[in-house]
Image (cartoon, rainbow, N blue to C red; front, side, top):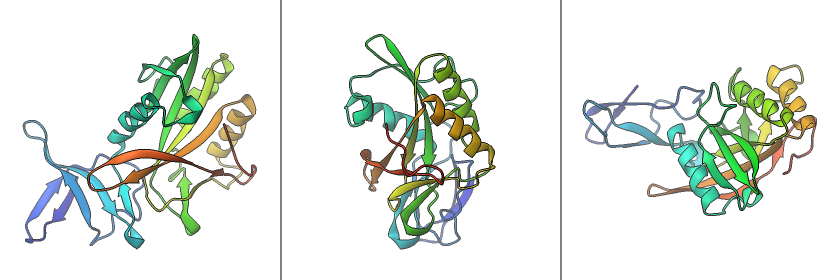
Length: 219
């Protein structure tokens, strides 16, 4: 939970749905927006933050999967054009909720979704933001690929200042080693930015994904 102060100086307790690394989005004095409480005894939910430079950040990961599902249905994700969504999970999603099972021409595609809200120098969206992030998704995608299915690692960028994704540069990190194995097996890596306003959030255009060992991953 988080305590916020309204312009009239009234203090309000709100629910923070993000349990990950929020550095840069939770600084004292940060302007935030929250949605009204839904249901009995529920708290309002923290949705947006204003980061340095006036950028908007959607910190609520609960919005990510519905946003991606809607974008695939509207054919905004060109790499997944023509795919139908079979299940918002799938048999490989034993640990994480951010997983989709898609199908096209009777062939299955498993997609693990990662939220990117941490920003570094020169507009770099940093992932993983903390040790342990993304490990379960990568393991599930590797298993799906080894079983002969298409597998996609999808970075959903929910920070308006991010211009590209910069993956972990430490070659000895667990994530780096798993990522190298995943890419070698044929797991595809793609990132899309979101356009964020106070009225709407939508998936828009693809962003490059940079890595210390690879210039760029492309689908």
